[in-house]
Structures are given as C-alpha cells and as structure tokens.
Image (cartoon, rainbow over all chains, first blue to last red):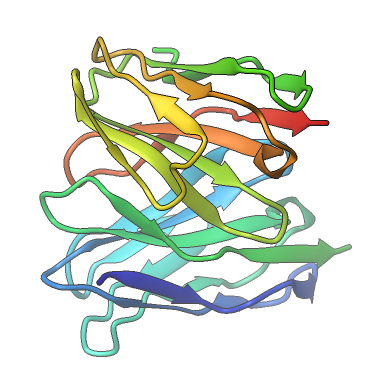
Length: 112
Length: 111
C-alpha cells in the first residue's frame, strides 16, 4: 500500500541555518505530493505541493522537488527564521483520488 | 468563505459520556474526513465520507460514529467516552486529487 516516511525530529537549528527535512514515499501510479505545516495550537495548512515528476513546489522560501527516480520529496529552506518553528508533514494523494497518506511529522525548532 | 469550521474548540468529558463534534465546510467538497492527533504521533484517520449518505471507516474507527446527511456537514459522535479518546481532533475536506483543508481542531479531554 501507499506510505510516506519522513525523518524523525526534533530538528533544532539556529536562525539563518539551512534546512532539509527528508521525505520518501511508496505509491502506485503517479501521486500528488504535499508538505503541510502545523503551527502550535493550529490545524494543518498546505505549505507547498507538486503534482507530477520534476515539478518544484515553493512557498515562503521553502522548496521541494518531486523526484520520481528516488521517490523523494525533500523539503528545503535556505535560511530559517524563528517563526518557522512548527511541525512539518509530508503527504501524498493518488491521482484522481482523495485519501491522503501523511508522514509522522517532523518538529522543527529554530533558535534566535 | 469560512473554509472548514469545527466546534467546540475545547471539551472536557467524564468517562461514559457521549458527545458530538461538529464539522462544516462551505467549499462544496465531496470528500470529508476526521483525524485524531496524539502527542508525538502523526494523524490517524478515524472515518471518512466521499459524499452525502456515504461513509467508511479509517484506521481507528472504534468508539466513534459518523453520518453525512448533507455535503456541508460531517459530525463525529463519541458513543461512550474513554480516557484513551483524549486527543486533538481535526476535520478536513478536499476535492479529488487536491490538497486537504483542515479545521482548527477540537481539544478533547476525557477524565
């Protein structure tokens, strides 16, 4: 069945450091891939998405590229801020489907 | 658009009590779902619906009931609350192949 694996946290970085959160997936067909972010006390919200191989999703300085050959969708940001402290979830939905498979989430702490 | 709304935001129940968590969306999405999120864990799917009158179980359905009489509303009922149901509950909606839209969550404590 479909699954999403992301790196365990917590990840602790200093402000302006480079961020990578690894995400790999297993799926049949050609899923759409997503990164969601959850700030303290809130629901999940979409951060970025990619719907086909080699697409790059980007938002708020975050980027992720859909790599079909390595079944990966790693999240990167060149310079993190304290306000980026949150839990990040990688997820997939099969094309034409609606059921979303979520990774376990990675908590990011950014120190000033 | 209000998006996905949930009520209440917080609730405390005694063991054995029943209650209904409300969820509504105004985006005309056919697909709605309920998740629970426990500390240190990701999201676990409780129940979902692919349209009015159609519901199905997710991975942790025991102790919960749902119904979908309209496209907009998808309430979650706790039949007899147990301490193991202490959690944060999220409702979400989506259309085919698109991203999920989440409500703000209901924090439930069962004593």
